[in-house]
Length: 361
Ligand code: NDP
Ligand code: GDR
Image 1: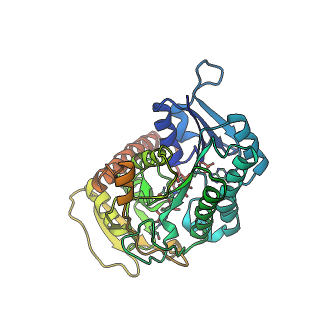
Image 2: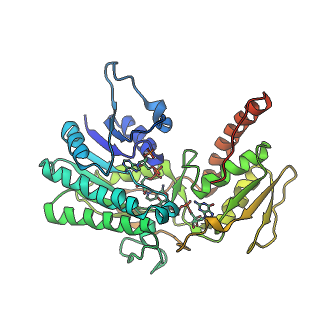
Image 3: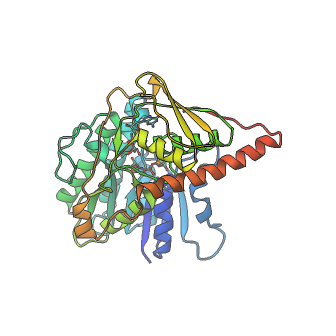
């Protein structure tokens, strides 16, 4: 039975990947951070009581900023595959926490690679690095492919460029099977609530249920290549099953604006969108029930923005046999449906007289 170690198992991709690998018969180990409250919501459905027999999922406390902890966990687990998904992954937040972002996202990657080398596991353990389209930043070529030069536009992007190159370097210097998946944005119903897609679907669903009346957004004109996280974790696994370690772009090849995302989510809920704020063209979408106010708020603009991303995943299609399966429309509808259910639950709680809380973030 193969053993996999996932850093960032409590995140969106970690949860999808853990479920996928368990389905493939793996023993799955994950690193979770100590928090003052439970932080395993996304993997609770996979949890197995450690006192039972035939346990296949194990969680270890750890942190990418703690080298000795990583060495000890890797020594103990002796993984066949490591998926380094842990990161301070929010681009806007990286402008506020640039040093921490570099420590976890750049040096954290180095710490894992170095732990593998210190433990003499270079020939046993395969390594996947969660690289990102944010490395393309101010894009130098459209669409972006494996050979497109990087020009990061945030502390997050810059840290991930280091993670990318140190992975390539350990492959070349020590013959490790180490590869980068350059993944474009991918979303799902368990996407973090402060990324724009989830913020939109969650916010509109709550407006629909009368729990709030406005959502505040930043740059509506950003263009992204949005896919589904469930499709993308399969590509991560496929990258570690090849004869030779290589780097791959994973994307849908289709691009939409933030504004289009709002419009489609609103249409799925049958809502009329009322745009408000500076720089917003007055426009609405047809719908009979409900009205959602979408306001532009400068606090959500970034000091430097990545205006447009569009990936070319031809290499992944040819060499991995991978391609995105979920359409943009299906993705938006799946996210809207899940958030509507959650909003209905909250509305029921509110109607019964219990207090519910709302935060704009
Ligand atoms: P999430 O933000 O949902 O999850 C990040 C995970 O990393 C969480 O489990 C988090 O723990 C953990 N983490 C954060 N900092 C540390 C640390 N210092 N030590 C240990 N664990 C830490 O991200 P996604 O699942 O969306 O993304 C997975 C990876 O892929 C990330 O590296 C991201 O940068 C990258 N990526 C994501 C893309 C996307 O569109 N989703 C696209 C391209 C790359 P906790 O739950 O405690 O916060
Ligand atoms: P991104 O995702 O920065 O592409 O990084 P995010 O959803 O945060 O932003 C996408 C675009 O939407 C614009 N935007 C807003 N963004 C947020 N978060 N909140 C808002 O209110 C808002 N309004 C407009 C942003 O300016 C941006 O242009 C994600 C992360 O998952 C990274 O970890 C990953 O590497 C990249 O995708 C690929």
